[in-house]
Length: 73
Image (spheres, rainbow, N blue to C red):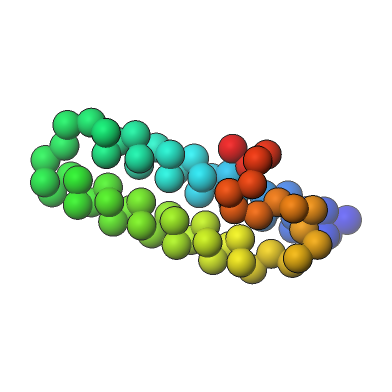
């Protein structure tokens, strides 16, 4: 049961990072000051890094649920 809970937490974290990345990408499509754009770009880069790290930490037999795969949005 603990494994199921851990998997659910990993999937939730992956989804959260993906949603944040999409939100930041959407923000970059709007009219922002240079300072705002720098901040959003920095956050986007951090979220992408966090997503990559989390995805790379998953076991190979995680059921195919890796970053960039369907089902995590």
